[in-house]
Amino acid sequence: MRADKVEVLTTALDAIDEALGVYDADDRLVAYNDRYAMLRSAIGGDVDLGVRWDELITSSLQHRTIPEAQGREDAWLTFRRRARGAYSIIRQLPNGSSYRVNERRTLLGGIAVVWTDISDVVRLDHLAQAQIVRPASRMRPATDPDASRRSHELMALQWRKLAEYADPIHREIYLAFAATCERRAGEH
Image (cartoon, rainbow, N blue to C red; front, side, top):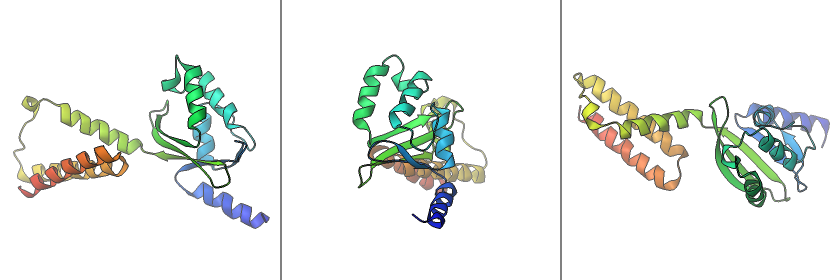
């Protein structure tokens, strides 16, 4: 690849919001953007061209940054190696931010890894769950019809935002909640 094409690709990778890492068929890192280096380093491992994925994941285990692996590291590592290239998880970092991590196999046998920041969606989900489990006796009717309408509109928006990132079953539930909130907003 000519130098100007490499520069165009590098600047393009750094311009996107997602963190992106690309591994070749030998599972060595061949391309990544700054966000990927930052996030991958946050869970353990020295990110650099040519580093093997196995080195990075082993470092993460040593740093104990993978909660679902703690106490069963060998079994988890075996599972993770088998799932390589067809893996998706929501990963919460120590700073509280949340990312959807997706790995997909490329046509040349490599693997593309994309980390998408879903921190806002996770916060909305926690808020929505808190609203669902709040006892009805603690809910108070709004005395201002405009405030009630705005509240229902906001909740509808939050449910629709959650639906964008949800699995199919939860997506339908969230959209039904959004429709209910929109109906109630229209009643005020």
